Length: 174
Image: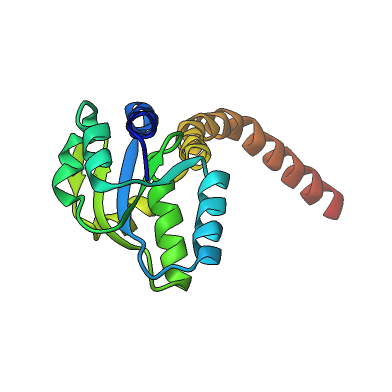
């Protein structure tokens, strides 16, 4: 049985994590074995995702003053909360990857930066690139015009060199 102080500590901890999180997922976890839940927690830790089983009344109270207050209506039944701290798609990626090999957890509520999404949107959210992937894609887009400009500037000199080489080869052949 949780004391009032324990409940306050849980609410404060979840509220602190929700305050810095970029996205959140609430999923039904009933039916998971202890080993499966431990595996899920391990994957979440590796991905920078805060994962916690919280009573719904405490979860509602914890997110009430955060941008995830929109999730409160979906807190029904035994739920596990996952908050993406570093990357917006991390929690969705952990949950959807885990669901590929297990029947549970079943995603019930998804929120991204204070906006409530449909549970089906978790798969799309999970497909978002990671921070490093997004940076590399941006750098490739930024690099392409510069590379083309350099090749364009170098082409007249390259053409001249090819022409001189062709003339030389032609004279040597004659």
